[in-house]
Amino acid sequence: MPTQNDFKNFLTDKIEEFKKYPTKREFLDAFQKLMERLKVVEQNLTGKIDTKTQQAIDDFTQLKKDCEKMMKDIEADNKSTFSNVKKWAIEKVNEIFIKSKINEKIAEIDIALANIKDGGEGPIGPTGPPGEPGSPDTPIEVRDKLETLEGDERLDKFAIRGITVSSSAPDNPKPYDIWIKC
Image 1 (tube, rainbow, N blue to C red):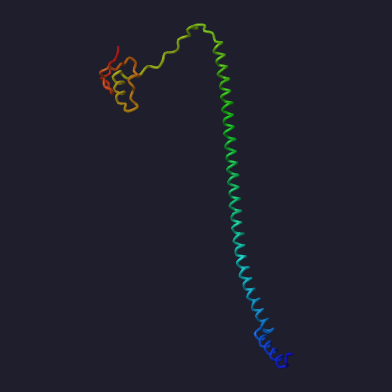
Image 2 (image 1 turned 90 degrees about the horizontal axis):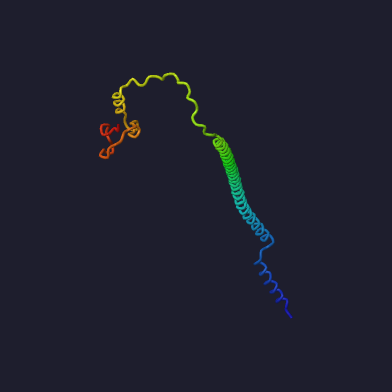
């Protein structure tokens, strides 16, 4: 059986062993420090979460504004496109209507022309009053005036009745190169 001394030694060892463990005060102080540290970590995390949340809200708000603008643009484009299609359709319908009316009038004119009978010439009407006198210029003065014209103002050779150009004449004939057929 153990002796009292053995029991004393056992208790002394156990007390020394318990001295290694913190006291109630040491435990409470350590726990309080742990809680303060957790509070700081919680505040840091809360700050980070709040910052990220605000950034997400700002991004969402901007995205919402962009989507609203895009929807307004699309709506305006659709209205514009619809308006343009409507205008085009009205123009085409009007063109068809106008062509139809023109064709009707042409048909009426064709019928009226078909009903006209050729009866020959009618009686000769009365002679009118005498006209104004002609140009006071002589033929030579008219020729000289025509020669003063330049570029596109010049009279084309085919505008003068009775003029033929000889086969030996150059491409740009001068007035004296033209042969007058009399």
